[in-house]
Length: 482
Image (tube, rainbow, N blue to C red):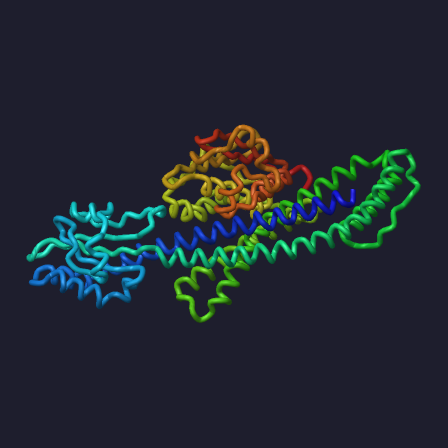
């Protein structure tokens, strides 16, 4: 058994290290390539959209020796264009035939291939097409003048990005080797630490299986193994009466910790990554990039704060320590206030957001702030999961001794099998899309708790791809027991 655990732990950690480094390496190398390609085309577009440079090129095309004059202009702007004789060159081509006229590399000029961007320029269009699988990047721009038509052609052979990726690959290989060495040592130590108490627990478990609950396993450590040992001792004394309760409690604890850890890990990792980048590039980073990094850090910090606040709110609900301020107030005014507050956000996404009252709404008794929180959560979800140009309706009315408000959208909808779970904590239909939208999977859980404390209820109707309707119903007179 000991060798088996050793083997499994070592194998698992080694596989994790290899998989992690391989994934990181692939993303890094692809990121370097994509960044270099995007930077090339962005630089070209910025350079040739410059009014002064474009005017000089058109003026040169009107005079004698136009090709040489345009080449001089490109040479004068070689810094802006990133021209390097080894990797990036410029050429002046005949605008009708694509034949080489002059350029920064006379030897390679006559051997230039007619690429799709050159073909586009020959037909009078600007050639900015790119393909990451090509071993080059190029742009071709037609220039017409009194002396004839010409093509300005910039081509980069991607040697720089190839060199960067080669160096990055060597670094990744070195990191993998070092990581594997460390992983072997740590896995052996971890296995030894885990195996000894597990063996003691195994012997005790065998006695419990035989019906002997008298033996207590000694373990004074405060880590997870120590907790497990003490839990086992407790179960040994009360196995017949509460073993199911303990199992359920343990399962809920693990799921909760796993969910919280998972939700917090992503924003915390982003904050650390951007902060480390800012530290490493302090003083050398462009202000726009630095501002973007800081905005990301602030946004992810707000996300962590929102998660923690939601968790604290749910914790208070579970403990029964949430204080409600019940009073009579105008439900109609609250609806209008919430609508006005959320209207701007919907307009930013070009969504058609409307408010409709089916009847005159009476005053109700309840905690106004909490009820408005429910309405905001309902509308926020509709805004997040309705595409731009979509429709969101806020409809309210009353029936018998209750008032109700429904938020209806024509967004992405919810699959039938997921509808029954949307009020569960941390439950999200599309986890990746929810995180990108800033969701935590707790908003509707909190809203449902608030509605229940008012003796109300929340209901959902949805069809995938067609939209969702969430309805909250509240008693006019407030909860029976305040």
